[in-house]
Length: 213
Ligand code: FES
Image (spheres, protein in one colour):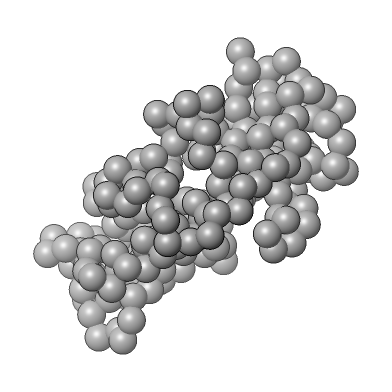
C-alpha cells in the first residue's frame, strides 16, 4: 500500500494511491453528494453523476467515485463548474422522481432531501420537463415494501442482495426511462426467497425499499 498526500479544499489528507477519490474525501469528513457509490465496488458504477470535483490541471471536473487517487493531487469539491454539473445531474434525477415526500417512508432521512438542502437546489425545479413515474408499488410482504416511483437506480439494494447476502432476488429491469428495481423474476417480494433479510431497505438512500413495521 503506497500512501498519497492530497489536498482537498485546502486540507492535506492521506489516502491510498489508486483508491477512489470519493472515499478519501468522505473519510476525511468532507461531504460530496453521491448516490450510486458503493465502497469496494470495482469498477464503480458512476451512474448518478453527482460526485463531481475539480482536480488541478484537469480541463473539466471529474466524478470522484471513479477517479483514482494519485500523490500530489489538488482537489476542490466546490467551484462554479462543479456546482453546475451537480445541479444538472440532480435535476435530471428529480425529473423522473415522484415527489410525494410527505407520504414517503424515506421522508427526512432521504439522500435527495439532504443534497437539496446542502447544495441549495430546489426539489421542485422548473428547468426540466417532469415525467411522473407510475410503477406499481409492491407491499406483498408485511415487513418490506418496494416503491419504484421513489427509486433513483443507485443499485445499492441490488448489490447487497446479489453480492453481500447472495440471495439474488433483486435486479434492475427494463432500459432507459423504464428502468426499475424489480425482483429478478418480476414476481412480488412475498414470493421471493428472502427470509427475514431486509438489508436492501437498510441501504436504500431514498426509502424506495422500506421497512413497513
Ligand atoms: S457517486 Fe459518483 S457518479 Fe454516483
